Amino acid sequence: MNALRRNVLKGATGAGAVAVAVAAGLLKPTQALAAWNKAAFEPKNMADALKGLGVSSPVDSKDIIIKAPDIAENGAVVPVEVTSKIPGTSQIALFAEKNTTPLVATFDLMGGTQPYVSTRIKMGATALVRAVCTAEGKSYTAAKEVKVTIGGCGG
Amino acid sequence: MAEPMKIRATMAGDVADVKVLMNHPMETGSRKDAKTGQLVPAHFIQEVTATINGAKVLEANFGTGISKNPYLGFKVKGAKAGDKVNVSWVDNTGDKNTAEATIG
Image 1: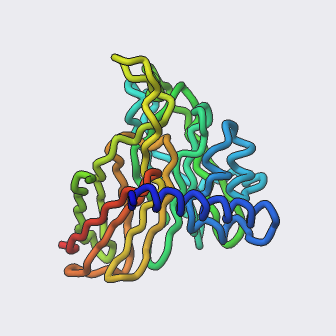
Image 2: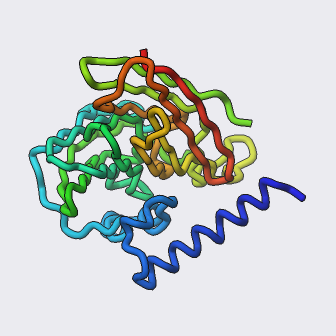
């Protein structure tokens, strides 16, 4: 018996059950976030990715600061830092709007974790890098354009 | 098995600055192998969990848009020098890795 294969199968049915629960409205998307949020990561456009996250019409905010280069020579590695000054920020979601799948990552902050994350993302083309922060049930957003000279998605 | 992961955690005032470097190919599933012309199957980290002294401080979900050998930086208030930072990830094939470091 191949143990890895078992795990993969188990994982697949588990994720399926969560998706079904979300679809049936049994679980709010925020509760389902413990498992990888397929409904948010797989859509190929911003609107559906936001819907998958359970975010509707986030408010533009100047209190979210995105630090990213104006021009990225290599789209495969674009350093991005997000800082939120909104009190009670509990989640930061990061999007690259023109990527095949726009949602790059979500970060759920707990305990004493500050509303700040730093990572490196891939960008397929010049696009807005968008951060969506959730604080006390409300959503806020900010974006910054990054020009990409060489795309980093696919070959 | 997966390559080791590097964690560096330092105190800056009352905030612990944690930097994590994971070793992972982060294949999107849409890249073609230059030699064979075949699509390279998707292979990427999906979930990352960080704890300090056993208490969860960060839970991240990654998509394929995170760069190869992912870097993650975060800051935790209230942590102290000597506290244990533990970071673990699971990828889409069920492979997992975990590492621990002491805040210095």
